[in-house]
Image (cartoon, rainbow, N blue to C red):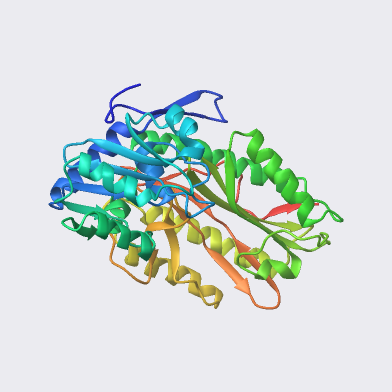
Amino acid sequence: MGSPATLTVSVAVDIVTGCCIVAIMDQEIISGLKERVSTEGLDAIVALSPENVTYVSGFVVPSQSLMRWRHAACIVTANGKVSMVAIDMEATTVKAHAEIKDLRIYREFIDDPMDMLAESLRDMKLDRGKVGIEMEFLPAKDFAALQRNLPAVQWIAADAIFNKARQIKTPNELALLRSLSKLTDKAIGDTLRQAKVGMSELDLAGQLLTRLFAGGAESYKLMIIASGERSQFPNVGPTERKLQKGDIIRMEIFGQKNGYLTGVCRTAVVGQPTSEQEKIWANLIECKYLVMDLIKPGASCPVIYRKFLEKFSALGFEPISFVAHGIGLHLHEEPYMGRYGDEIVQAGMVGAFEPLVYIPGRFGMQNKDMFCVTEKGCELLSDDTPTDTLLRVG
């Protein structure tokens, strides 16, 4: 087992080439956080949310996001030392995968995890330090316990520090997200092509999950399968509704691997589309290519959104407040390419853009793609399913 700052290795499989992609996470991530801690004048930073514990440790603590009292925490100091706190129930799993030498284990229902976190901070000589912590995640009673345990610590909200760090992906994060984007897109495209009149949305859900897991995904978030009149609703799951001729089908899912997520949405029509549907789809695809052309290092996120609106407004429908958002360890991350904020696009960012239309009482259409920002511009990551014309099935 290596020292805390050594490399943590995870493996993803590229479904197109069948090759293993070795994702070396910790060295670049820990180095980047160490630099940010120093720049902010902190002595250390504490990750507490499932996303940021995974970001630091390179490992998803299985039940942390399911049971809020099962806290896990990672400390990164200004000199690059790393310590982790985990629950006894998952001690063997964490020890086998997280590869962090200084691992503190607390007993569920007996020990207070905040006591263990405080002990770790004291042992690292941080009991009088300036420490960043995730204020937006930590429950008030747990923060109060930390303050009682460490009255001399100056606590600083560190949520924005983690958010900024996670915006720029390392090459190994990019390799994982590329592979997972193609996997997710392929699972959706292959499932939609099998859709037929009389199949239920739940039938499609079963096929989608089978393909997603067979392709190498470990989990998923927010599966949306909405057909016919249900396609007008933004975030609804599958039902027993059976497909009918002329139905629009919207299918979206966030495939997950090693904690990272990729979101893809595809739209199909059962049979032949109407001229109105073809017109709407043509505009959404024009918006897709417009946004891709605009995404490049140095571009303004709100300017991209305003130029998108110029094209989208030809349809006469009300747009949502953004056309793209960052993605990685969470469904939505900064930056948003929308009407609010002033973020600038940078190389290494990964996101999803999703031109969409929801027509109340009728139907909805959406095309969501994964992208990353390179030095040259925008790279489309979800490129398995052709979308230039509306997919016809059934």
